[in-house]
Length: 440
Image 1 (cartoon, rainbow, N blue to C red):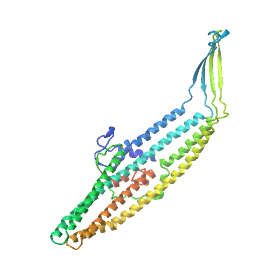
Image 2 (image 1 turned 180 degrees about the horizontal axis):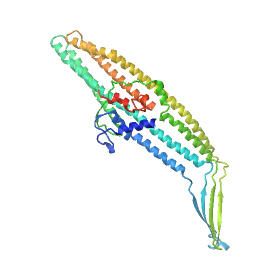
Image 3 (image 1 turned 180 degrees about the vertical axis):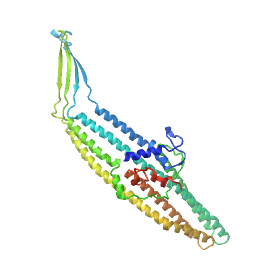
């Protein structure tokens, strides 16, 4: 299911156009960036994914090497070459040319091939797991860019609100209804907001750089990320997420890992069985000019070394994999719980802010802003109303960003494409990303 899901997603992303190539021949898009383009580039150009894919080729090389039989050897021996008495000179030389072949017994080659084959399968699992991780992480980085863009917009709106009060204060001062110090206070507040705006610009630049790095670019070229944090996809059931998390490559690999460790244990036991070496050759007697066949059989005696240490290590590794699988299952379950609770809390916070806090703050600021001009409210009340409105908008943005990032993490943990509910994972890998793909 995971392979089909990601293959379909990759095929969809390959159909999308991107702009000019960047560093080292890699595509680095300019203009408005969509989530689909970001995901496509991350899949095609991620250095991490490329390294994982190279590991698959390395595992294939190990499998090929494991399947090879031992090479034969050719021995040449000359005896009685230089001596004394009747053996003086080369008259009594005996020359032997012999062909030797070590024969593996005890199932060594089969166990070695099995272990290497399981290693190749594990490399495939790691590749699939890395693809899911990149899907989830790229979506998170994209959400952070969209949120940083909106945070900068809020900072600019706040500065405009703050600076917009200054003319009203000046008019009240001219009319004798306000103290001149209120202008200084308002201008100080505007300068403070300007610092916040500069910080928001810095945060946006950093977020853009992290997103561009996901597809191997040194510097971002896109002008903005096109996304909508207002639309909130439904949160899948916790039981469904946990059920699907158990079949993701990150956990499914442990079954193959156990098989590989078992094959390594079998190999360690087989190595304890000595391999015989058979030889056949021809010996020529220079003194008589005659020749004879030579046969050899060699077998090591496992008196001291019976591969005990390697067998013990292989058994410990087999037990360790079972322990690692249990730890991984607990870890994934804990991460699913944490992300789910984060999403639930963010959704409740969003509902409260949208339904009660933000409308009230906007209405209060509108009334106090109008009343301040008429002299019914003080500057402190106006500043407090503005601060409350800005805080409500910022809190809503943080909650929306947290919700989308929690969904992205849950998608990666459950084996679905980011932003997608698991129930729809097999039909349309990118359909539920629409909350971020659409514009406002």
